[in-house]
Length: 244
Image (tube, rainbow, N blue to C red; front, side, top):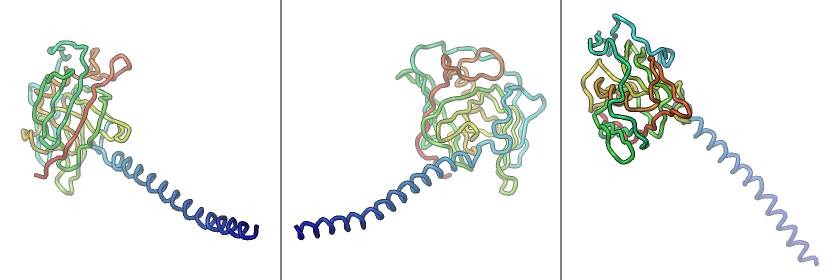
């Protein structure tokens, strides 16, 4: 009996000495998980692709007589973009699921209806800030919008009016307030190469086709929000933007 009593006491001592270490390890793991989650969220929320005005201009309205500034140069809005009309569903309606894929490695966007490719064209992703990767949903479509950001100190400042065919996207880690979008870009013609501050730049003529095709379907006006019956198209961004 005495031997058993001693063995039980030893087991109790070993257990008591083990418990504090396990608790400390659990606490450390919880803290590490919290920090990892916070860093992911902070990276998404600390930067806005449209960092000065961000997403404050959601009217979708055209501002006459305004072009903008990009990388220290004055840029003018092409006349062809000065009066965008209500999009026509030129590609027809479909019951097949729509999906937009952006490959940062090849700087290319491909749109699918089911398994069929509807369109594919070059894009320009983030050069001065990374374009986020993952699965996203379009949460608003704007015929026009005003974008401003970058820095005058390092010559990356931009202030662009009437940015055409803008479709903002988001997910649980990249909130709407981060200001990332697919949009037409009239201030450069270097598509197929990184040229943005995090958004996905598209040739205006390609952006117009994508805007007409992608959901939510416009019901008229310059701003369209998705609804449960008219949800935003799924956007998947993969790959790594090349260093150029």
